[in-house]
Image (cartoon, rainbow, N blue to C red):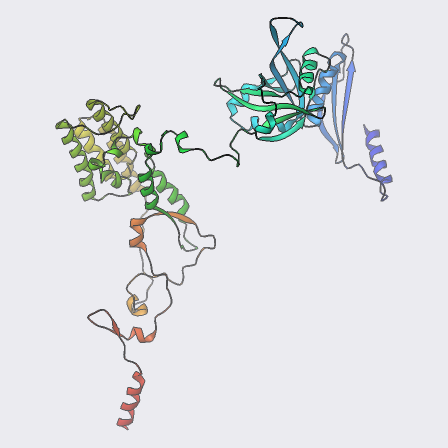
Length: 499
């Protein structure tokens, strides 16, 4: 090994001339073979670095396994992969009535398997298998009966194209597959998923006497039309809660905000948390919900429960909605709601109320943010007679009280001096303004803000000082400001009269 390394160094010295090229790196593989009848003392050595320009690995194998070892090294050093085409129908004889299924292994570039290996992990494990008697893995793809249209790669969206070569070129199954493809035919290869489904993954076809494997795109292409909304869970456009989703978008806006450089508050996390709360329970289609179809009973409870805080009056409004539903059930009124399984079929009256109460309980449990939120859920349990469920309320209240006890107290202090004038005298405007010590972050974040809070938090964008004349102006009854111009002229006249 030292002799080989020294020869490389000498060659690089002689290659210093402009018309010569030096050896930048060499990966030396030594294969030691021996008869099967004897035991060899030479052991395998994995790849290791001898010098910055030389790596070495040693393999010691019996003579009967040299073909398998060479195949394994070819796949490794040339970045190749193995595909086994399974289930190829072949007749044993020319006039045989039945056919047997055979498998053919082919080599190609490893990038042809990128789509399969990067897809679902469970599906990838279902098709990957270790090659029998070898140290590498192969992907098994099933033969699919060719269709009448022979231009399969032309009608499918393909992402990669690579040449292939059969591993056992002298076997009869390999010869039949190669002859079939060289005659101008195409072969579809299917991937069997773990759940039993199938999906077309590759196409085999020949061009000018060379055979290629095409990787078929598994997703939609830019040339296809976007998926119709009818393909979703709703089935029809009218099944989706489009109007409610429009109101949801109006209530949540992305708006830039100003913050101090010393402020540690992360508005992005607050926005995500607020959005998570509002969508804790939000059905997509009308046939999967009842309470959102009964807004004459459930409003304003649905709108109030998603808020961060509830006042006592808002808690009372939510309880009134529960009492209204109890009154409707006592009067044996029908809830005009479609069936969850079949929208055209009406549910029975008892099933309607049973599903409605269960959904309402799920909605209230998904929005337990404060003690007042828990009071609404407790009202539902009391009305429904679920005394055992009140343990949930007790645990939630204990958690709220503990979080309030752990919260540090904040002492608010003012930095204005006693001699400073009030804010209205400085600006002449009674609205809050942004102070000059507030810097705008160049990477201003976008945060989610409720429209109802915007009116209370809106500030005057102008922070420049007002004119001296406006500061000395007098406000009339109609709200207009009256300022006397050229006041210094009157002062000069009075001074002359005194003299």
